[in-house]
Every structure is written in structure tokens, then in C-alpha cells.
Amino acid sequence: MTEAEAIRLAQQGDASAFEHIYRLHSRRVYALCLRMVGNPAEAEDLTQDAFLQLFRKIATFRGESAFSTWLHRLSVNVVLMKLRKKTLPETSLEESTDPEDEVNGPRREIGGPDLLLTGSIDRVHLERAIEQLPPGYRQVFVLHDVQGFEHNEIAKLMDCSIGNSKSQLHKARMRLRELLQETLRDIARQERAAAKAGDSD
Amino acid sequence: MQCEQFEQVLEQQEFEELPKPALAHLETCEACSALFADFGAIHSMASAMAADPIAPPSEHVWISLRNQLEAEGLIRDPQVPVHSVPQTSPVWWSVFQRPAMAGAFLGLVLATAGTLSYLSNSQSTIAQSELTPVQEASSVLSANSVFKEEVLNVSDDSILGVQRQDTAVTDSIRRNLQIVDNFIAVCEKDVREQPDNQMAREYLYGAYQQKAELLATAMNRNMTGGLQ
Image (tube, rainbow over all chains, first blue to last red; front, top):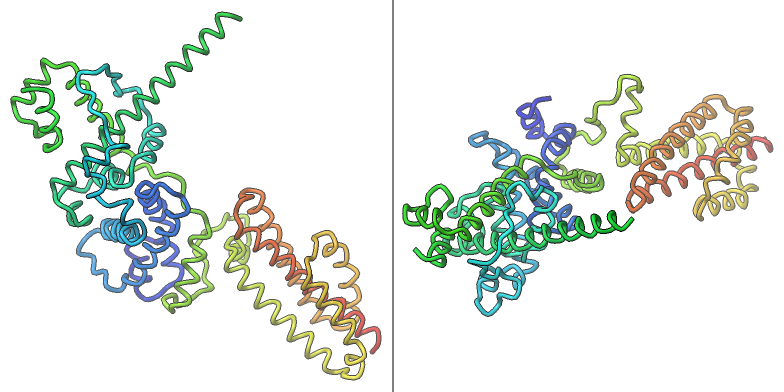
């Protein structure tokens, strides 16, 4: 069954078409939700919500845009809506841009010693670092750098200014850099310890 | 351009849109050059992540979603499975790859078995009324926690007893037991593979109960038949 066939059948209420569409897109939607919220259980709830909304609205899909793009935007909206409702103080952009609240924010390290990340980090390290980002940073970073949204789109989605979106992204990247450099230092330390242990044997 | 100014530019502009003074600063400043390179590395790895999704959501997401769709009347035909099954498996087996569908089907099977049992028993009302305590005992057996070993041990004896009475009903019960056994095997596999999956455990427990109920029906018929 092609996606177009599945969509047409789902619009008629065909059960197998619903499942086909779900199987086709659930991994990607779940990945988006998980990266946005950083919690597997919550991400599963959001995935379910996103597909529920999709199937409720599928009869209105006319194919003007790609189905996956439509689903993608819908999923992002579901996640952001849920986050706004549930953890408004925690995810508020205003809060995380408050200069008084920079405990988890990036520290300026210009001129400091650097470990070049190119070629040294892998996806697992980056995934872990993203999980450690404060929610406001994480959402903008995932939307921009992972999902490819533009700042003006993020501003609309998150109901903030374009400048705010840019600022959040910059801080997120700075914090990620810091986290990844810590990871690299840990790895180097472990390697040194292992080499030392090997020499003493 | 100073480093702080460069950072401000980097915040406002996309990588490919950096103005000439910022690019010139990059040529001369090692720290900002490293920062720019790291941002680029993070960005390209993050972009690649979107096309490489992580593990799928657990199966209960689809089960709950499907239940919700059914409840809202959005699904027209809840019994048709979508998964393709291996060529070696019979077509009907694909139903049991999906616990929700298997559960629904088993419910139907049990209802049918119950109806058959009722129709058969109604022919001997007097004997049935004398056997009420036995039936109650069977109900208690199935309602309580029925352990797998207990359930499995009694199956053959019960079926042999029923076999003497009514071939159609016996065949039906035997078929249903086979279906329940297959379902139990699927559930056990799920529980082994996902020990933390509460839903899988509930399905397995439900399957044991359904088997216990079927066997209780078979034993009941066995005893009733003996009195006829």
C-alpha cells in the first residue's frame, strides 16, 4: 500500500490504512517528541496525541503540502501546546533568557582553551547533551538544527520574537559545546587511566 | 572586530551569511575559529539526526491510539490487520501478532463458547441446577489468580470428557483452546522481550484467565454430561 493509497483509505475510515500510516511515520514523530521533551513516557503520550489529531483531521488533508510535512508541523504544534499547558514556567522563553537565570546557561569562554569537536563527537554524545539542555534551549535547538525550521517559523510556533529564537539557539549551541567538551575530556581522562593501568601491568 | 562582537554576529546570522569583517576575524582568532568550527560540527550532526530516528515508540502507543480511534468511531473496520506476515505463517495467525486484536477475538471466542455451553446445558435443566456449586467453584477458579501450570494440567482430561458428549461443541472448545494457547505463547514472548511492559503482562494474565475460563467450561460440560 502506498502512502497516497493509505491516506485515501484512511479518509474513508479504513482501519488498516490508519495502522499503515502510523507504522510509516511513528518513529520519526516519536523521535521529534522525545528530543523536544527528553522523556520517553511523555514522548509516547505526545506521539499518541499527534496521531490522534492527525487521524481526526485526515479527512481535511487535500494534498497541497507533503503529508509528512503536514504531520511534522502538527506534531510540533502538539508538543509545544502540551509543553505550554503543562510546564509553562519551566519552558518559558522569557525565563530562560532572563540574565538573572543563567545557572544552566552557557558560560562565555572566548579565548579559553578549546577542544575541537569536529570528528570527535558522535550522535550518541550529542543526543545525551541535548537531553541535558534546559527545556527552552532544547526546543529551539531541536526545531532549528535538527528539524530544520527557520527562525521566523519557530517564532510563530513558539509565540516569541525572531531575536529571541536566535538568542535561544545561540545559547543552546554554546551549552552543547560545553557539554560535549566535558564529554571529550572525560573520554581522554578514561583513556589515560586505561593506558596507565596497562603500563603498570 | 573583537571576539564579543563576533559572537554577537554569530548569534544573529546563519553560518553561511557571516559578513566580511566576521570572516576576517575568523582568520586571525584561533578561539573564535574553534567556536565557529564546533558550532558547524554540532549543526551538521544535528541535521543528520532528523533523518536517522531513534527507537520506535512501544507497542502500547498504537494499541491505545487504536482504542481511542475505535471509541471515536473513526475506524470503520477494526478487525482487519495490516501487518504482513511471513509466508510460512498461516493467514489467520497474523491476527494474533497484534495483542489488541487477539484480545478482542478471544473475547468473541469466549462469548461463542459460552453460548454453545449454555445451549447444550439448557437441555438438562434439573441436572444443571444440581450442579450449581460445581459451576460456582469453576467460576471462582477462573476469577482468582490461575497459575499457568494448574491451567495446563487439566486441559486434556477436560477435553476428553467433553468429547464423549457433543462433537461440535468439543471441536469448538478444542479450537478455542488452541487459539488461546497460541495467544499465550505470543504474550509470553512479549513479556520475555519486554519485561517492564505492563501492558504485555496484563495481556498474558488475561490470556491465562481466558484459558482457565475455557477449561472451566469444558470441565463443567464433562461433569454435566456424566449426569445426563
